[in-house]
Length: 396
Ligand code: GDP
Image 1 (cartoon, rainbow, N blue to C red):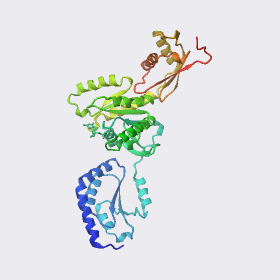
Image 2: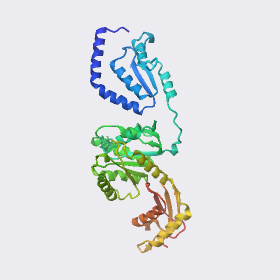
Image 3: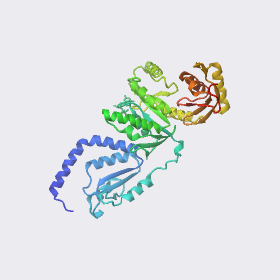
Image 4: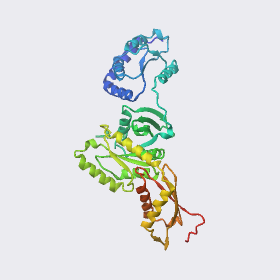
């Protein structure tokens, strides 16, 4: 379709000026997108021909050395007649594929090419992947951590749709293991949070935690452990998940040894209800400590699958009861008959007792500690369920 030449060209000049100003910003974003991509679709304008930015972009794409498909969009007319097609061939990515997104021309072909160029992703069964939720209050560095993990060279990334609407889970395979990062869309979404968003993000955290095996609680190492961190740790504990605390921004520490001790003291006092949590020190900014973090996540995951054989469990618990006789409650004493591990994920122990009501909170803690001392459940919550042994007279 013929267009009046003058307005068209003026329009294009204006657009070019604007693009010029934004160029460094755009190039940064392009670089970031390419870094995380497996295949690059490089789109040029089939009708208008190439601009200076297209050539800049071509340099960036070429340097990245990723599989690239050159596409000339807006090819609504007979492709040969379009200026952009011939020019684009000079970019060094071969003949462009003429495409019209508007009229759905060649879009399928383009997608077939993408699929053909995708790297082989070793199929790791979903159940063998550790599901990780990265949680923490705003500005502690969650997005930076996710991006740092995803930016690792030997990570293979594929986005998979989550079960929650617009939650995007990301599968990654690393030397430390295979993971699913839960709701990376929620974590990566930048921007300042207002009050409403804040409440929304607590909900989002809870949902992510419910779907994970291990939660990574990011805390800001320059500020220490706050009440809000404690609260968020509580979400992981309530859901009986694994918990690894990542003390971030350690690059800001002037005296790392002294600061480390300070952070450890804070965790002991402010997150003391989770003595089993694993922790490590990282810098998302400088990408330090990430392999160790992932190793701890895997360790927590393994702990969640550990089983104690029944005879061993009973030996542990009866010894514990002998060593520390349960206190009398209303003149009655708790009695343990038999225990068994009913399941994993989290490790769940069923204790058959005379009356579950007689188990004092602190005694429950004591029994949990006894189980933890005998078998390594570091990094995960475990569950103790008390059941009245059927047929047992509860007055005994
Ligand atoms: P989120 O709200 O938890 O996702 O936090 P962001 O990832 O958006 O980071 C919040 C701010 O902390 C940003 O200004 C980051 O640049 C900064 N930040 C994140 N991680 C680090 C780190 O390891 N070191 C330093 N010095 N700054 C960091």
